Image (cartoon, rainbow, N blue to C red; front, side):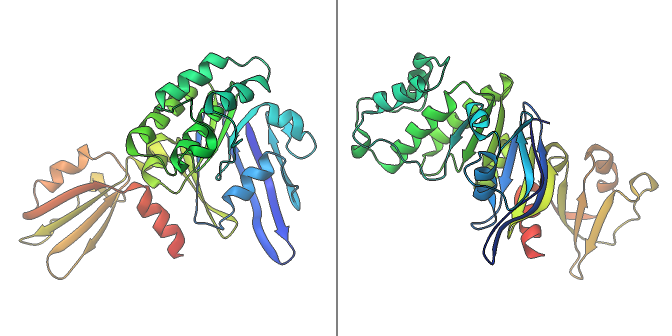
Length: 290
């Protein structure tokens, strides 16, 4: 595992920001962090980077202890914080040159190419930039850095849809190059689109780990019947969750492939039918209703 935590916890007096968090991130994986404000996402990222010390537990990146070997850890990580703070008196080109020069073996031209892809004006000073432009500048300084691990905290906030799409494309390219990405966001559709696995945090605790390929096989079928529900074939027993309403409406949930289900559906007296993927939102909302 490239990133590992074991019983990682952080407490501030009577406040527990992160409680007994154990997880792992594979090399080359896009790993999502989900949760509302105050759920512990940013605390977890800061512990991984060695910016704060844990109250209990351990965290490692590439076998290095995130607390005891934090400098070596940060050499392997490019980090975009949730609130981007940059040198306001510099022009965008100077900011990118600075970030390229403070690390070894960085390609300055790659930073400028990333700026072109995100449609960033490199001649403008940071102090005269909009919030969205500063976000793009922070993204360029992070995504163009040649490190094996990229950590992104709310990377697409303040961005327009076309730039959001390009950021997702750059993340996918980084993954294809063998890099590992930790992606923390409130935008469920982006997490669903780009991540291989997702963990959901609530009040400092990890409450669910979801493999996205498995979630994409889950569907909800909503139908209105003109007659009785015919018996479920033996081949589908145990594979469906069925709820019937008194008005003839029925909801069928499945985590299996849809093809075996269509034959049975064709025998039902259907007046209306709608098939939708379960989606990450349903899973997220279920976690926070508990």
